[in-house]
Length: 193
Image 1 (cartoon, rainbow, N blue to C red):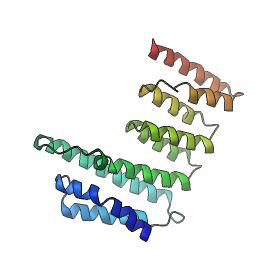
Image 2 (cartoon, helix red, strand yellow; image 1 turned 135 degrees about the horizontal axis):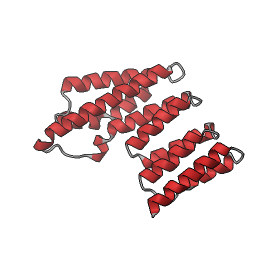
Image 3 (tube, one colour; image 1 turned 180 degrees about the vertical axis):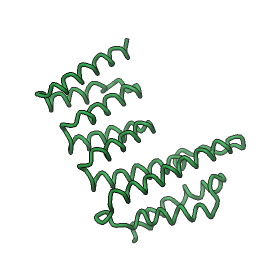
Image 4 (spheres, rainbow, N blue to C red; image 1 turned 60 degrees about the horizontal axis):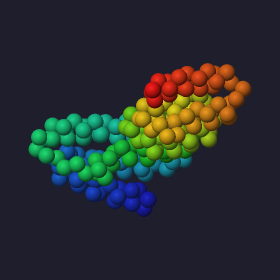
């Protein structure tokens, strides 16, 4: 219970900011707190995958609503506050982290999380999450490719070949990995030329 209260307490500034910027009313903020409290009070060992997916869906919908309202109010100069503005995104990541720890063998869950990180351009978190997924699923080509192609799309060309090279090394007898590595190298060369 104390842990949940600490989590909610850390959200206070974010929720007050939403209210001050007229993104959510006081009543809506109360509903957000109530929903988040119910998402955080369930012990991780008792939580089902559907429980986590519902909580994530709730937060993603909340983010869509916030973005829509922020655009509508942008003419009236809603202040940009990076810390508060990304609070829901951090919350979604927290929920995915919890779900992936509990259901670490669920490849679809990992893929959904990696897709979210790619879409939100959270490259640092993406790199750490790909590494965690590969610890559990080192023979899953999709995870190696997600890491490499995300870096290619986000133009982080410094370590771009490393994920595929490591995947190839870890699965050197797999013709699928060899073919995927060759295809990636061609796309990489197209990108830099």
